[in-house]
Length: 115
Image (cartoon, rainbow, N blue to C red; front, side, top):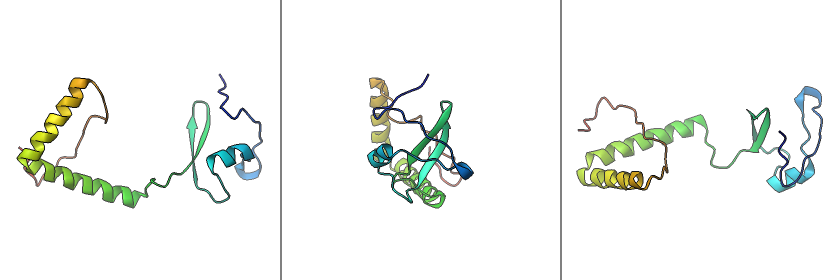
């Protein structure tokens, strides 16, 4: 099944070394200019190409953010009042049956006592 987007479907050809011309209407609509970084992934029997959004992080940035999140979570668990409020908020979301985040999985911190 072929999906035709709001801008229609346009045929193009793969050139030397795999180059692909993205039609101007798509480039303009998506803000793709020469030098724009994009991601390409296999998707639904084709290739999905998207511009890299400004909040995409390098591996180093991602590792630093995760480390800071783990540290913040440990601090939250060390404060009994804040931890209770957090658990109550999570329980309220679960009662509503709304999944706003994936199930929480945190690495085990061998140096911290959480109970």
